Length: 118
Image (cartoon, rainbow, N blue to C red; front, side):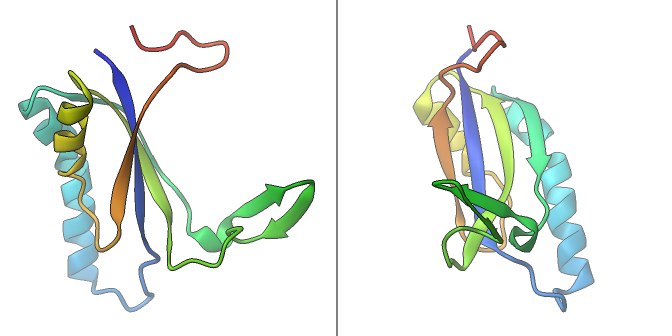
């Protein structure tokens, strides 16, 4: 099956984010692979990223701390999933639990030194 990257964009969670809401969000993310499988897809990789404030950007040889652009939303995590086609990938990606923001879905073309999707 083709593979798709799901980039999760959302605002940084505030320090006073309610602990019970954080627990529900974490549980929803932990349960996502089973929900995706129940709809005929598969998550093959998942990565949670540290806050955007830990980012270091390199643009045109210039290194700067933090995200390159001033933005409310940052990339919070990435899923790689297998789906029948783009429409199926969009259906599966819509299940991604987020507080605010959204997701971006891109087909994976392949990777350097590693075989791409079949």
